[in-house]
Image (cartoon, rainbow, N blue to C red):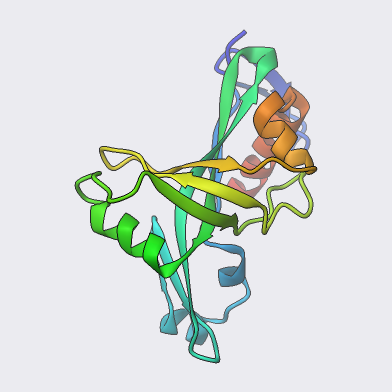
Length: 175
């Protein structure tokens, strides 16, 4: 069965839905969510990059990448757009090659900077950030470890989890 043909009942409105959204993402890294308008004005966020200026003057750098989670029940992949904290050097390499899709390195190390719903404690997980050509967002590969999200990236998520994510998208879209 495909994601487009899958039928499910939304937990927020109770209506039957056809098709599952197979992607969602975060507007910014987790620290960004806690800043007021004045603090956000001192920092920078667009659809692919974020710089946060801390009170002590330190700068944190983030890039948006794609965490792919297989959904074996429907032979599909769920794509989570997540922010990853990277070093200044890695930020410079990625931002310099961003337009052309040509980078001085294949990727870099980073820390997951979002808490993936249903996977408590996922913010801060270690990851590899693999730069992609042609303006595609980097792919995020979590390091081996003992966390349910790491297992989900290897073994997949079940449809019930995808339905929960879909319901949260529906709830947020409807108010």
